[in-house]
Length: 415
Image 1 (tube, rainbow, N blue to C red):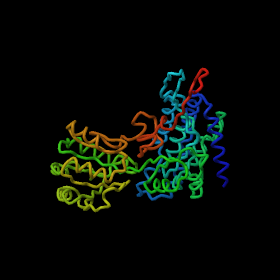
Image 2: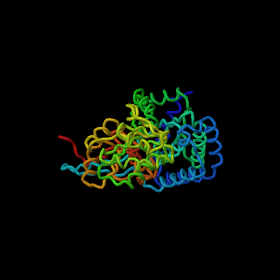
Image 3: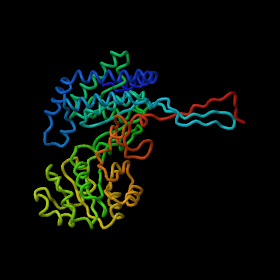
């Protein structure tokens, strides 16, 4: 396949998109949303083809699965993004120098955004919506597990663009093979930024092999620390929600860290997890308290691999600590710097923890499941950045722009 041709088309498309008004991009996104609702059966049929090749017991099956409700939510998210103000052209700052020069720092699109992702069919729609609203073209490379669904989604979007008189190359879907991955990772001069979404293995591969700039997203090894002054009722509800709401997503809880002084409450906190058959890997102190108070078939002694693992499954580790500083040290050692939480009724303790923990999102008395662009009011997200350069946390419209300086003078020359 001629990937250079595809990338060149994406570059040309990005230049056309940059000239569109915010009203036009909003109208087009609403048209895409309407088409999604019209083609529910087409999308479900394509998704069924993909699902037929995956074992339903695989935790990723839920991530791949589309339903009428999930498709309706995708369309709603598309309309939500359309309703948000485009960041393009926004003045970030403006100053006037003593010599009369006016210097404005304004938001501009990246140009062409590349995204490589695994079995997440909603990503095709989310990425397109956010990129188009921020005047970027996008080049997508999905995983083979979602090939049929992604192809149906891309065909829907490209046909809608054509009907609206806009180049379909605003979205390019690459084949789901390794050759396409290599081409994308090496597309210097065409891809302005590359964003991987998926497992820690995928992100590490992109980091080690990409020749284009990249933003790390996705891998979430998430902890919740139950403090000596934590509320048991809140703790049980939050731990249950963070662990079991959707185990296959990056904001799902992987490890409960508990103050040794609250071990007597551990069984109560963990009890709801048994209804979802969550396997707990407990350190010796936690194991001793859970033995006889949690189903034996779901209780295992922890080993070194139990910590620092993104389970993406109905599994969770438990670590006992003597104090908050030991909790901070443990979390800092194993965290992927995605989402971390503390459960405590002491505001000073919460402030100390949130100040010391290095993560994109740090919660007090709330579930890590809230780390999501829509939940933050961003409409949708292109990923959760776990790095510190350019963007951090849920990446939405502003994070899909860079900036340039526009300087206005009146004949000034430099001495």
